[in-house]
Image 1 (cartoon, one colour):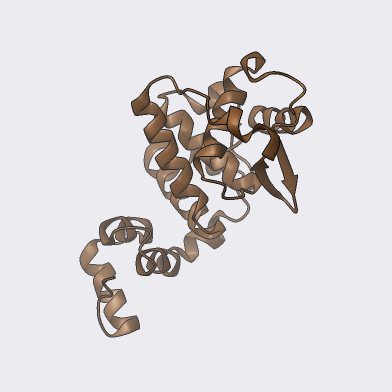
Image 2 (cartoon, rainbow, N blue to C red):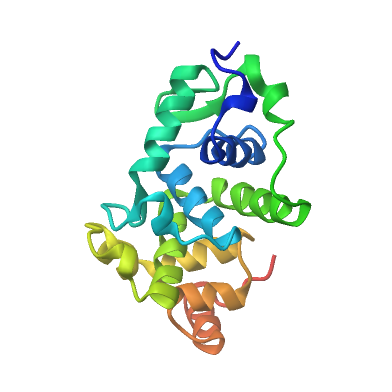
Length: 197
């Protein structure tokens, strides 16, 4: 049992629990949690800076999110095993009772959390990096030491995401930094045909 009742938790802690729970038991690592919460702030139309997001090694990172995650762990709400974060078995039922601000926002957060939790590390970073470049002129990427590595591999990463059915061809072309026709040509060159699953 958690050492503090759920109704005594602050809003950020509740949001983190709601987002982790929305992944349907998928174990998250720290990077995934940080990026899920970064996207959650966008869903809430909240400036990520309000919860301390800044440029960091893997892109947007918040010490406040890390501190809240650590606090939830010490209170018994989440556990971390081998670098993976999951809701503690003893509080799973209580966590499912957390209510988002509105049903629509709850649905959007669940969709974002579930989707991002299923992405591989490089896929997640490519998506976050491309969106940040488009929306914030790369503001949250200034300190990323692997940005160049991810962006230099954006075409094969986007192809892998498209071929595994994670994104549409339009989104894949966007992430690859090409238009759809160029992306289709790249698929044809590599595979002999445009792959459709």
